[in-house]
Length: 80
Image 1 (tube, helix red, strand yellow):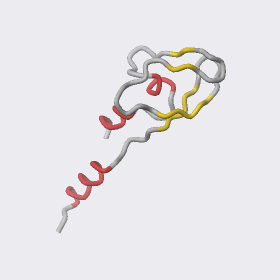
Image 2 (cartoon, one colour):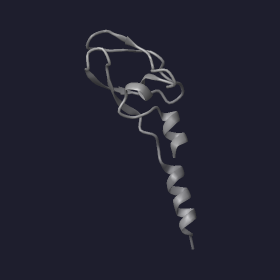
Image 3 (cartoon, one colour):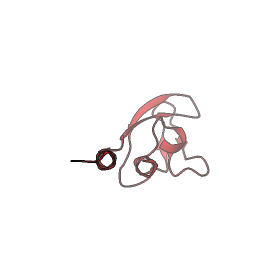
Image 4 (cartoon, rainbow, N blue to C red):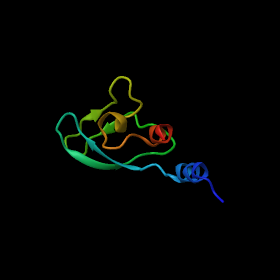
């Protein structure tokens, strides 16, 4: 019989990170859905609406952590 701990551990290990984030441009306010890379942080991002090249805020690893609706996959995994 599986214990509650074993079930919870299995459920936690099976959670996949979300790979789409809506990035809000700090220059023009446009929101764009973007795919996040799973193997690296995205340090630069060019807004398709105004062309502004944005960088993460100080202390954040990538533009998704600073301006996205969902933090990057590496942070999602560490927050579980």
